[in-house]
Length: 269
Image (cartoon, rainbow, N blue to C red; front, side):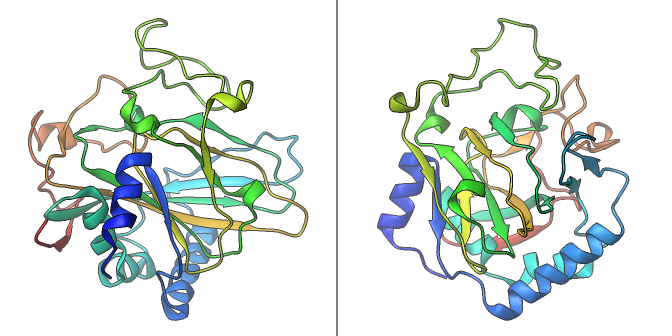
């Protein structure tokens, strides 16, 4: 899969882009199989991200590629990593982790505006996440991005349910802007998606999503990819996802050359 220079430039300038029709029906069927297996048997890392009073249900899970063959076959054999390498401008691509996000019909739980990087145990700028739904996603339920926000540095990460600053002291990082309260100040990117379409975004790009309507499921797997300049950055807090014992195997600043982060692609970037 060869992206155009215009596609790559758009991603690098804005921090997010959409690639239409990237995956075949067979690849999407494989991913759907993996999602259903994952939902039927969540891992110990799974969390419920909706409140008890929510009329729907939102479940997330992490790091299942080793135990769910459909995920593994998809990420090793599809064009996802090649596209990630081109967008990052990296000569190599490793899998960082997979992330299941399933919102059942009538789920009102929103995914608040946030960056991903502050929750992770890595440093580096060559990274990209792919958000891939197996169901059609309307624009009001899709992932939304603040254009160019990946150039603004780290912002205060907060817990999604309680809005607490658990990882950094209050005031030590700038707070997120009031994107919804001042919509005219920000360019927001959002794309309705059909199965086979995927969005790619930088781990520092501000993003969030709404709930889903009656009769709609929104089944998504997000694969996180890392490039040449990514190194291990052990944190004094629990990362999302956690990698228990990794700090004893990879020192601070070491490349992510470890079986947990398999090499998926090498190019000429």
